[in-house]
Length: 263
Ligand SMILES: [Zn+2]
Image (cartoon, rainbow, N blue to C red; front, top):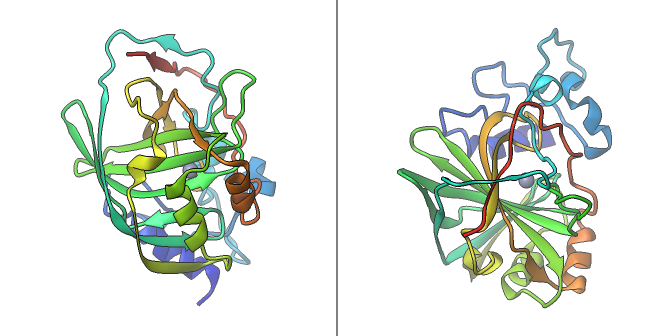
């Protein structure tokens, strides 16, 4: 099985959500060309591997989208009316995938409630360095908790990681992360992703953005928590041995505003 086939199968786990083109497989010919961070400024022009494709290219949105992620959160406006987040994450046996671009925890158990919307936690994964930045402040890592609702809405909760104390939940994930790309490790070790979140969940930045990897689909509601979570320098290093530069460059805000909730 080649890596494209494998990445398509990974994408299929997200295809239950009708509202978002999680992968170019949905509603298209099934192209999901390989991509890399080193060529990220031309993701929009990638054609399929060795196959002649006419525009629109599979990842065109990465290049022409006006609501792309990540962004600099520094210019956020204080929000008066933004719904808070209620997060119910549960213990679940770890299924850890090395998908060629990141370390991803599949089949977690959890729910996120925002206003009247109920989301299911679909997966979470890691970036080093952080993708979102606050002014000049970039963090060594960032976690993305990806959620989908039955009505097709999608929400990603971003957690910025800073150097400090050792995080046992992160250590379990690191210790079970496959070193070989395109492999998955199904374990009997249970982790509750709640321990990867800060105590205060109602201080966050929110804006309308996109997936930060191809196909860069828009319509994603972002919630980047204001309080970073500590992980140790050794843990950051352990992750960097697998992925040391899997972050997308900052994208222009264009017509968007970032709101900040501080209560
Ligand atoms: Zn991500």
